[in-house]
Length: 337
Image 1 (cartoon, rainbow, N blue to C red):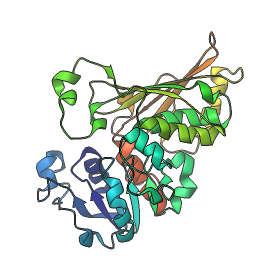
Image 2 (image 1 turned 120 degrees about the vertical axis):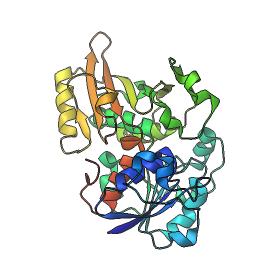
Image 3 (image 1 turned 90 degrees about the vertical axis):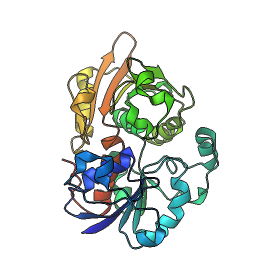
Image 4 (image 1 turned 180 degrees about the vertical axis):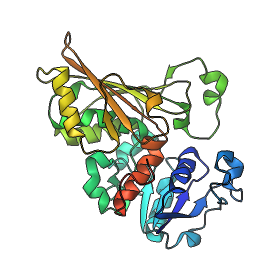
């Protein structure tokens, strides 16, 4: 049995961690840390957890976190980097769900996140926590940076094509649709029901912070510098991501050949399903699965990829628990279904 602390436990990712870990037979949640909600029972904020979770949210106190086996930082970007240096001394292992340690360059972080990085010496220490790519590194890591939800959706769809060099990595275009929970629990006019309902809009066009995250992983997989186009869209659902990715085929290949390539590539991955048609968000909702479909547009010679996942599970808390299971040698699917 290992002990866990969740810092940022009252947010959407934090509460999803509580839901998952409360059913994990090898984990005891020792600390559930929140800011403004400190002192409140978890069930008072999330009544669906009544009689299932008996935790009281507590204020941050590094002394109380000493000796915990694993700490999850479910904090907004900008807050995790101020806490991670001390947390790495306090906890046995740390899994960060923010974007603060996904990039290896402090300059790139400042460019896309709009603030200087306060712990640049740790950027090279965090292992990028995409299990399907870095399982071996994750297993021995003390510090894991959980991928973003958009990049998880796009990268899982792209990596087989890139690793087998069937597409030109300079021609990648990614369009992703996301539910509103991806913006976190803090309120704003732009995320209010009236603004979001019966609407769809692109945002942070050409400047989204997940762009360099995806480019760096794609560059490593393809062995060359990459500049891709990524456009995120907000749609009126609570949770889920649907990504459509296109890239020029490097050589002629049929849909059937590429489906077989993808099925072989992911044949041993418990949470990637290659589907026959176009995947749908409703089929991955509240699961840790990423569903991938594809087709070939023969007229243009382009590969069309489709990817769906739940941004709160495989895109955040579920993937974090999957990483924890790998780090501590538990069965990878434990408590994730």
